Amino acid sequence: LLASQAMGKSKAFNLLMSEDVIAALNSIKKLGIKVSVKKSYCEIYGNGINGFRYKKNIVLNAMNSGTLGRLILGILIKSPQKIKIIGDKSLSKRDFSRVTLPLEKFGAKFFYKNKNKLPLTILGSKSAKGIKYLENKGSAQCKSSVMLAAINSSGVTSIKAKKSRNHTENFFKYLNIPIKIKSTKKYDFIKI
Image 1 (tube, helix red, strand yellow):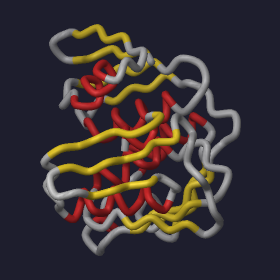
Image 2 (cartoon, rainbow, N blue to C red):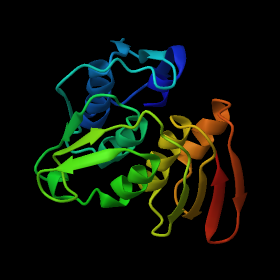
Image 3 (spheres, one colour):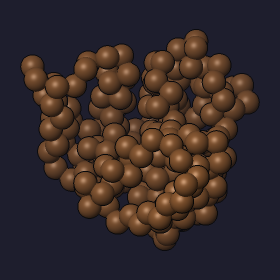
Image 4 (cartoon, rainbow, N blue to C red):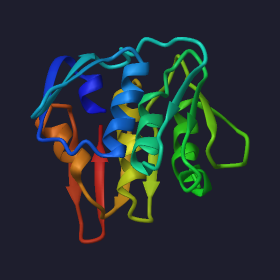
């Protein structure tokens, strides 16, 4: 997902071509990102921040991937077209409000068939602005979705997050995305 937001070619080596990875690759392809899968690596040709090509009636299938379903919503907060996110029977029982509520603060709108569950439709905001966000359950998915929304919006986003996995923070540092992190025993304080 981060490679889709970068400018130019990224390579990922030794990917496990699981259902989750395939669902992510198929989703970014539908958003206009070129993907080339080789024997030992995958090339993704990103179009930069907010560089997706939006068409009408896009449906993205997260299959069973809660991570994809939640994180891609953060990247879509500026979508000028409605985009429908679906998942398998198991994923469609999971609550998405812990992600959609903070993303609504950025200006995105959500439409549900069943309240807070998949399938849902997102319509982004042209004027997405940074927010203040408290994540107090220790969910790396929720925190990461807000972080991805932050790089797709203007202004500063401040996050107070209960300690959880820090993969996205590490990727941001590696990719030179401006991020400031202060930590205590229980919380990380993040500014993007």
